[in-house]
Image (cartoon, rainbow, N blue to C red):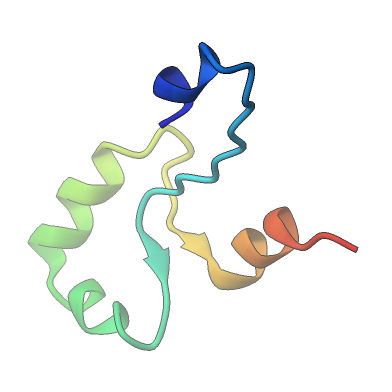
Length: 60
């Protein structure tokens, strides 16, 4: 979207986290193979928490 709208001088702010731990995604974390493979693809080596995402996108 940012690339498409840049020609109109429109800025797009995006938050695109990797896997976020939520009540809905916790069931996936029980699968050790999924957990290991997913963590191997996350540079920080950990899953994001909902509060981290909320703090990032919260505007006054």
